[in-house]
Image (cartoon, rainbow, N blue to C red; front, side, top):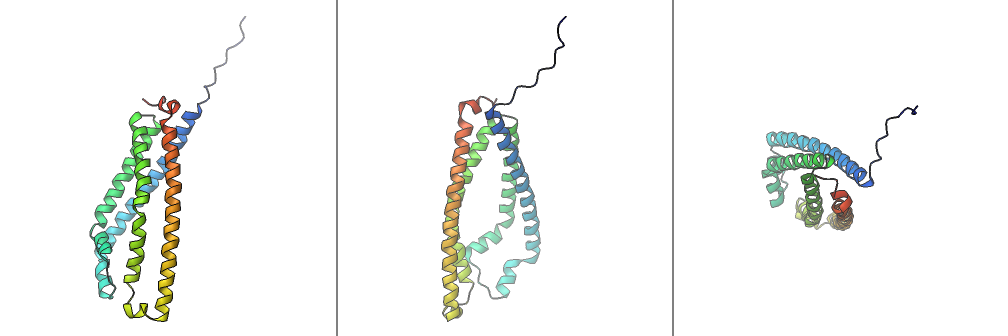
Length: 192
């Protein structure tokens, strides 16, 4: 008489499969949050379109920089672009979870693009501080209080630049590590 046979337990998943699953699930959560954020941003843009914030600022005598005007003119298009990119990231993350090769490649493309974009946006920090200073009347900037404000803006600029560079470097390092992990043979063998 043979002893009863118990069903075999499933083989433990490999470290590569666990890495892919965790990465994909975290990315799905981030993509869903980005979609919600983009939808809220579209709602805000629609409300701002009715409020015409640039007209309100001009009526208050606040100067508008060319960058602010460009953002106001393209706010809806930029919001839709953000929503479309978030949806694309959701699709790529889902394909990564399902271990589709196009999902792995698409995910790597997103990692590289985000790392490059972080560095590309660093020069905008300087423009943002220049725009804030441009909104202050010139006679106030020449007063003692204005001098103090200019010093505070300069400190804020350098703090923002240093923080932005550190964050861009840290994210580039993390994204580089993820690209290397997703390109390893044991991970690539999981995808079809």
